[in-house]
Length: 316
Image (tube, one colour):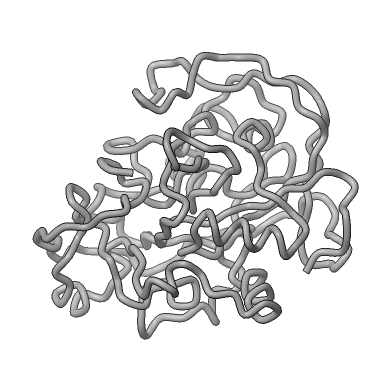
């Protein structure tokens, strides 16, 4: 995924590591609201997306050249269910405990982390960065359990999105849980929440009445100067206002793997992340899309699950 804040590509090269900069100190997560009912195990909230036809894509001036967001087209879908939130650390840990699964980041012994998520002392000891994207650092032993590498853990963020999961890891979780990844068309239909032709899940305006972004995207000057009081990291999976179908954080927070293939061996990603910023990457719109290799993992990549109604069996 070269040339983008969205995520690192598969290669890294020797380049100077960015210097220190000011950063925020609080997570600013907001109170969540209930979506549709829980699954049979009582742990996952499902949203019902009815069968129907919707207008998919974007051919406006804000479309990213080369991403093939357009043309606008009518797409018909059967009814399906999609999780109200991305899979959390708590849910992924249940999978790992039950199966002893080892993610690809853990097997490789390294994963990509946004540099301001790393303490300054550790950044000074890092010598490799992604070519052309110096804010991405390959951190040894960073994984879903240690999102910023050794010394970090998920015990205090069990309800945050699991990250550092590859497309292959996400598919393994789906196979265990009796779910699947949504297609891009399903994802976009669900993310729109019944609204047609809007940029975001709630409408066209990024900001609320107080001038604050209505989703977790980069605040401040990307990539070196986050706004005071905002920290560049994911917030809780069920934070903020849900859309019309009950989905949380379909704009910003973490990228979400979809089932679809891209060019070559790449796989589709939707939703944007906390690193999106209009000055560099506006892919947090509901029609926006990007891709990466199926073995790529990073601190801003997670996933959401879907299924066909009714549920085939109880889900863990």
